[in-house]
Length: 265
Image (cartoon, rainbow, N blue to C red; front, side):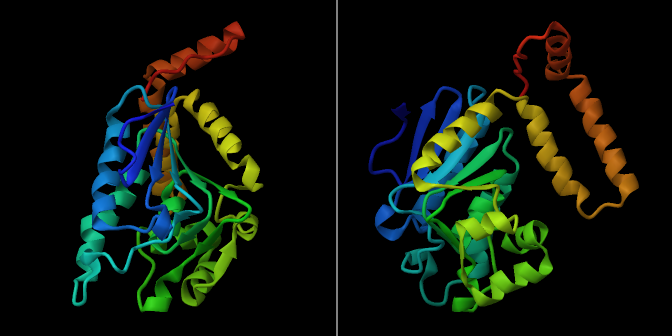
């Protein structure tokens, strides 16, 4: 594994084969967001999206937390700041980028994920959390609403009643309960987190990346549609994918009883 940035960077970038890991690196503040960290994270995601050698991305945090949300001491949050402007400048592009990556994105939640940090994790395709981790919609405690996509994500993941409960109370939700109610994909023992995420990333990286990205897009787009529109959406996606290399390769591999070698992205 090789680091692509210095140890002082607020986002560490490392590659293990075709899997790229981005590690939020402000452990003393539980990796809370600053303007400077945003200015490193979005380009790191863009670089992963543009690199044809990358077939899966893992997002995690250094130290004992995943991300505690916005650092309220950051100069970007000085008294009188336009908070909506902060959202437009940093969090909207971040959420949009994660949801439009051309490869699967896994959040490896190694500790607390609070506020925008929780919703950044939920923006990812799959969330695997250590059993000691927790998720906190902390916004109501400072007079705000969920951001970084939280208002869109929460009701779709757990339904309106639970979404309102989590958002209004700001209560800590243990990872085990987050898995139980369908907020996240998997909760594992702390000592298994790294190995579990590595195995999952390797598995997804070997799959047809373009089809996985299209699956995300189709599921998201179909949510407000009626059945007829969803069926039309499926047909359009299948038309694109059916003309690509990976479909032909998958069918050929099926008949030859051999592993497929997917390359579309």
